Length: 332
Length: 284
Image (cartoon, rainbow over all chains, first blue to last red; front, side, top):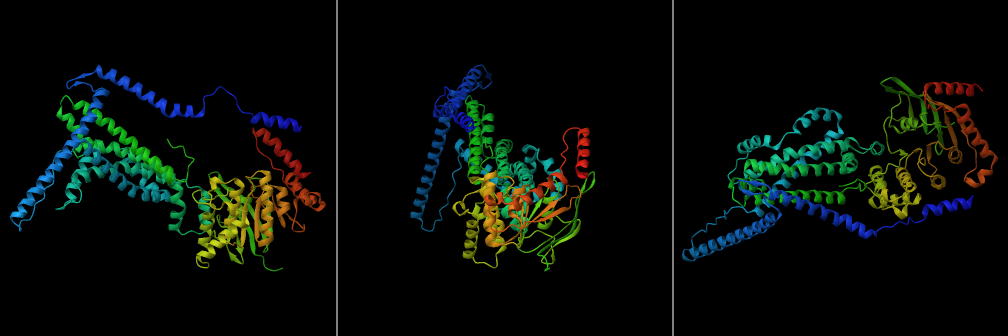
């Protein structure tokens, strides 16, 4: 009997001998080689397709044209920076000269007003999307917790959430523009109006996934944890702080990732329609410009928009990995 | 006889369901003295957990009530600490922090920070978890989690410790270890304990009294068995003890002859056959 058991055990534990590649090679294959192949195949299809599409602005840009345009746009940016610096140097010299002549002269400092470059537009868009997203998070997470905790509040708010959730940013935009113009009046505005309009549009659109996910996370709180809290007689505020909030962190992060993706998409559309500074405006300007370079510049913007969206998502993912206690959830 | 610490006084528990009211408990009446270890045993679905939840204050009895030190229980509280079946530790806190949450809540006014730290560590030591107190629940085994759950409950210094199948989810060897640990702790602290169990050996080994419940619906207390075995008890020596085996067979007889559980499997016809079997068994 015991020998039989011993046999069974050894058989179970015997190493599975198979003709296998070493693990590190398999990992390398999965992590590097396969995505590379995917990208190469895509580039191939792209260039073949591009060479067969003729538009009124010339051939559709192929990967080489985009690559050339990346360098081009960067050079333009550096050129513009050099111009800006030269402008300020000139201004300083002129002011110094006038001051030397007349000590009572109060120097006027004028800001450089050159056209924003592609790189400037990227930063404008990033700042706008993060502001809109953070504003949404500040509103959505407490609201989601409240809705998750109270069934009555959930029933009351649900129709409104469901109605506003599918509304496109483009529908909001005219309203937001008019309301901001009417209400945001000051002589020395801290933020540009266009920035406020874009930001609020982003907020309105990425609010809902966070509200919904947070409330679902809170509502599906493990009943054992609620019982622990009841046995300890935790006061309401402490119950939220010690039990509800940490328990819902995984769900909140899911909502935040969804929202950030939506925020980025919405922002580009809003900038395009409203002519607010940012990548969307860049695309629209190039389209209106209609030079032989326009299509390749737009294609470059498309790829940069994609890369930034991807980077934003990865950043949220890393943040989730670090901050969430639930390491078991499949994050992809 | 002196006043009991805990008086479960003729409680009925009725749950409203879409199909009408369901009476889970009927006239459950039990008096428990200070320092007693009580086991509640019965088939699954007989309402053992309901009794425990009523005592804990998590449920409100439909009729009757629970008195602790002569005062009625109508909400949960740390003086009736619960050890839940699935440990129910908060996964984002370490073992230490889980106990700390309870200690900070219960002793906010009566203990200084240093005293609290000492008390938390003392309780974790009591359950032999001092070596892993800064680990999170997902880093420790099932038995260890349950130890922390017990430490958390003990750290509340409860008047009654309520345990809902505390070792039900553990393997047999770990369970035996945990039972030994629990007896050791009980020797030291002499708590009043109500424990739900499915395990006959566990009930006889640990209890002063075994409360056997009839099958639901309208479950109630069928028999109460006084276990007069000397403490400290040793599982190996008891295996040979005729008295121990007598108690064991008394519980088994109750569970498998008097209160045979009929699981309804398959068609109604089968169930009919079985229920007639049950009637025969009951009349026999």
